[in-house]
Image 1: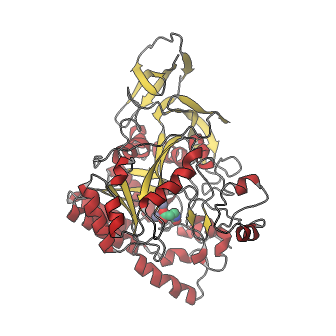
Image 2: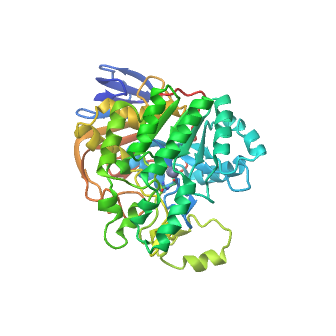
Image 3: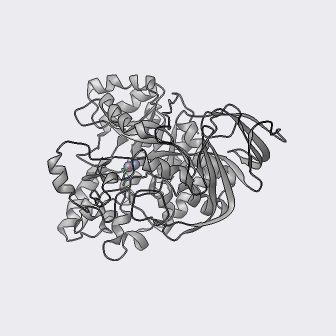
Length: 491
Ligand code: URP
Ligand code: ZN
Ligand code: ZN
């Protein structure tokens, strides 16, 4: 027995049409008009849209970073993703300093054993020694086709130009794609102590330490290297006009370059959010920083005209008021142990969060929540707001991510033979986004109070219903690793 989704309107990246969809097992078997109910379960989709499950290719679940660990893990983050209509994501495995890529992969595989939706891995290379370079081709056998390099976070994750260029040469040879966090980390590492020495400690000075120019410069540098090496490049979390100009120039020259922005950069500003009174601004500290209304307009336009190909979240959440309970004592006692999971069983305890940076913006853990909100916010402001069509919404949030990262057409579309990752979308239902009702494990929401129209009503992962209204019907451990293909297209 399968499931027939009856009388809905299917949205793909290229069209919108009325149809029934038959799912058998984990895949879509048939799309057409008047598919007989037979012995199948019938889901009445009258007045609803049927979209492919969302794909967020930029998340950091359970990431040790900024003196703590990001809150959401492969269970809480996955449940939140599904409630927001996202059924697949790609997380970043971090190569441990001094260790191998395989060492990093082992750690992330362990984290993902509790997966509730499907996931892939990018490999973030932090230390490209000769033996690590030799290890890169083996990633393809593991279904990992993307490398990530940080041009920022000096003395933490940052690599130099030599490393970036060599990584691109190797990636190009093996049909892989290189992703970069594009900010000039050397300049940022000079500006930051200068600001602090001047007594500029508040969260808003985070933006002064990472101005748009250093993002534009680094983006251009990576784009030029992609042109020289022929390596497909994907610039993550693009925020500002100089970066978009660098990307547009590269694409006009025919270089294999692509980019994403993240939902938050379309809505939050330094003025209103980062410079909010008191320590509120810490909630919005991420890198690159949120920018200005002008930059937001540049980003919307880049999503419309194809300079940008995708919208992701860079979901990396930390408590606003963390460090509650005997965490320090506990950490001392359990030195070297992984303390994920401890918090879930001890509700009186919260790992350190944004409060680490009170009095010093440089110590605020960088990152914010958004995995659950991306589709609803993107739909409301993109489609209802008249910025792009429903098909372009699907392209930016589902299809392009799948194509660029070697998952298409198994993921990212509604088509015969594709995984039955289906969102039954209610375009009329209204919802107010709030930390009181979201499923992300974090005590604030950057879109608090935002009213949206259009929400996921039911969410299916490979044919199995995981969300039904406000009910979680999925299962821990049932999310699968997505083995991705090399030589993905440049879109
Ligand atoms: O502030 C951010 N973006 N935190 C996560 C790590 C990164 O740079 O993507
Ligand atoms: Zn980054
Ligand atoms: Zn990131």
